[in-house]
Image (spheres, rainbow, N blue to C red):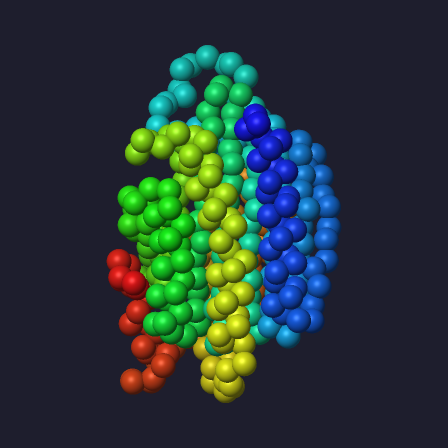
Length: 306
């Protein structure tokens, strides 16, 4: 079977279907709403939003496939310079992917994010990117271990070097520099993956697919473990503050948000990642010895959760 952009887009649509079905079952109440959209410059997507459920307050599972002239900022990130002095036409690009962010009702259930994406240009450039990361409002060691072990299994199946390398990349990427804290407990993150480490593009595509396929079983298990835990109003207020940190990262640092906005993507879909409500408290101080303080102390890079 020929591996091309149509094959990859079709696989991503099927993944979106599977994840939406799994999340609806886990929530037990809410159903996804779908909106199909078209990008004027080329391509489009289907946005699926779930809200006001028993477990999920707001979440999205988005598929997109867009194309057109490659935006200028891509050239700034390429390793080679494109400042040749001529006025050749810009290369054409195609990008497709599935992006997910789930904000739960309960502060005991973690926020989760996943994105897997494929990119190509008509000059022969092509690569894979993606990752999964978890943002608990309260860090539970057993859940963190489970989450990282599942990701390590996926990585080790394909290349033993991938988990330590991609975990480090996630720790560095999902870092709120102006707060000097990680967004959550990390996960794995990779970008511009093509060949290397004795891996062909086809082998890396198999790894990439396994990352996407792991999402549903991992998150539905975390929902099962935590959805029935009791919580207080103080816990809900802490949840709002942690969501505030999530917003700060997505609007200040996230490359996916930047890519979507700079390629004239659909704004409602791009900003789907933001929670329904969030909070900011001036100079907030946690109580010594509290669960909030314990969580803050664990929002550090390079922790070994396994």
